[in-house]
Length: 148
Ligand SMILES: [Zn+2]
Image 1 (cartoon, protein in one colour):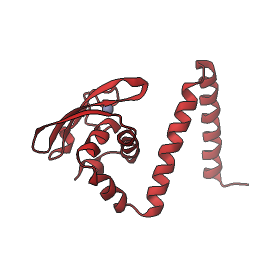
Image 2 (image 1 turned 180 degrees about the vertical axis):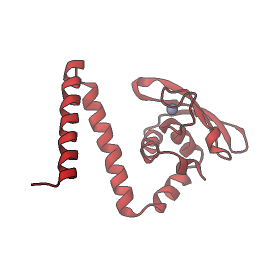
Image 3 (image 1 turned 90 degrees about the vertical axis):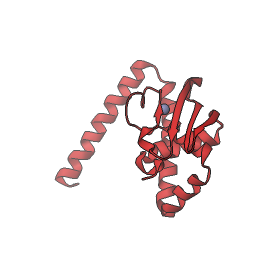
Image 4 (image 1 turned 60 degrees about the vertical axis):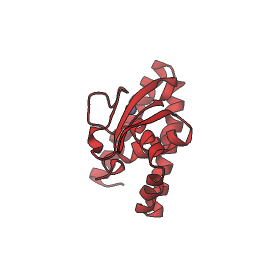
C-alpha cells in the first residue's frame, strides 16, 4: 500500500495544505525512494521528517503525534508530496468528487475551529468542551430512542 493509503484522510488533506503553504523547508534524497527533510509545523516549530516510499511504515517524524509511533502524520505527508507531487492528483482522482469535497471541507473546518480554539482561555475551553459533550450525549440519546 502507498504512503497516502495508510495515513488517515485528515493527515493527507492537512499534509497537502502544508505542502501548498510552503511548510516543507528542505528535502534531500538519502537513497532511492528515501528522503530526509524539515517540515515547519504549527507555532513555527520545525520537525525532522524521514520518508521511505518503498516501506512507507518506516517513515518517521519527531512531532508529538508521530514520534516513536508508526503514525503517518501531516508532516510526513507534506514531505512525501514534495518529493512526488503527482501523488496528490493520484490520491484525489481515486476519490469520488463528493468524497474529496467532503474531505477538503472537513480539513478546512478543522483548521478554522482549531484557530478559534487557540484564542480561547482555558476556562472558556473547559466550558465549550463540557457543553459539546452534553450536546453529543443528547444527540446520541435521541438517535438511540428515536426522535420525538
Ligand atoms: Zn509529524
